[in-house]
Image (cartoon, rainbow over all chains, first blue to last red; front, side, top):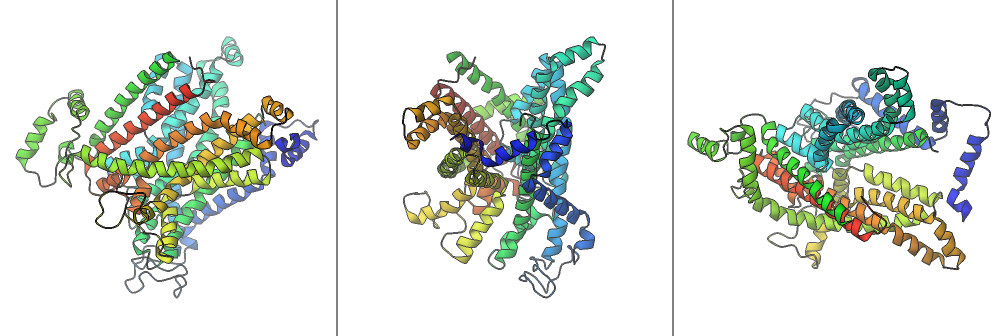
Length: 302
Length: 318
């Protein structure tokens, strides 16, 4: 049973990692070394890069104008003339809209996580480092937001504010601040009273330098890993908001929005109708797997 | 332990108050005058003034909140702009349909996740384990609103086996799960909704059972000659409280997050109600539905926590 519990793959990995015992690697070298042999993560990271490039260079890649409607060619099937993936209910080229759609979806997926990481991380470090009543105030406020499932909170805020891409991003940012704040607070509290922080203070380090080097150095890792996992959630919820009519507004091309409008023509053109959702799925899956790979590679205990 | 239970209940109270403050504030997030948000667009000036007075919108904010809270506690969440019926009635009626759907989804998810998770934990490190892990990642990455549409395309549009939307044949008021005519309506929504919990519960089951199997007492069990089946049974028994807790949390999560699945399948639950309220800018319904769903979520989390504490003797919380 023992070999079963360790597994051949892990044994191999152990052997690989222990072989060059004389060579001392830095932490990041080790992470890079681990990632180099993690083909799943590498593949999906390449996929993410491809999707990002596709979105950035959409005007050069897309064969047609994604906004150009045509009453004559509505809801045409796949490979109709030069509409490779057919047309939507207004006669717009689906392939071009799918290519452009990545822009809105990625933007709405990434921006809230970045902003929330900054705000939530800052609040969490403040709460953890100062402690006492400040901690109490910040963390109890965050607890209230934990009383909502994330999609419900996003729907509540953007629903009340009245839809639109910016409102959707604001809502998503508010959704992600509490969990990131909690991660940062936990990590900061753990580090705050350790000996090396005490030593830094005893040797005359200012509060700013202690937070800047010693606290942040130990807090950024967990925050980053957690935030990378949120990107997938963010893309799913953002497209969900657009699907409900709360995110990107028509006529802009967005995967979630396309899914909701193409749904009306499900009996006419079923396969085309499923394509935008497939893009959302691939993107969210890629971010999820890459985040998982990063977490494993960056795990110090392994 | 009683000390812990009392503290846990007390702890839920400020969160509940926070939730009411948030829901109260939602009206002010909306662009425009909050009074107009609560009334139909063609309301006369007299009606506006009347509402202004009765709801106390001319008073300072904290007082407004207290007035609102007082009404909310006795069940007066205002009137729906669209249907002109009490919000509470509308939400509660829809909520029972949502509970039905969520319970079905979480039970299906548990069955699948339990089999997958235990198998993966037993053969950990093997190809089966990796496959199950991949499946659980796929489960949490699938956009439910897309999976629902794909299922509709396959089983309703192409094969014509199952109805695409709704809850029961036309004209039927109550849902009867024991009749196939009704049951076929719930199949696709339940499968769609169960994807995320399958992913999450599988992961929990795998790690919980694997952790138990790594314990020394498992070797003792084997040494005294127990069959592998009996060993697994021991491991499952030890891992169960943790798995059930995650299942409970997922149930609460599904209830609150049902909006996308219910919108796809026109399932007349609270999420569908919410989605309609958003489209029609029916702010009282939006506010009421979110308040009740959030309170349900807080309540479910509380119950899960308390049940876990009382069931699992190993948890001794200070």
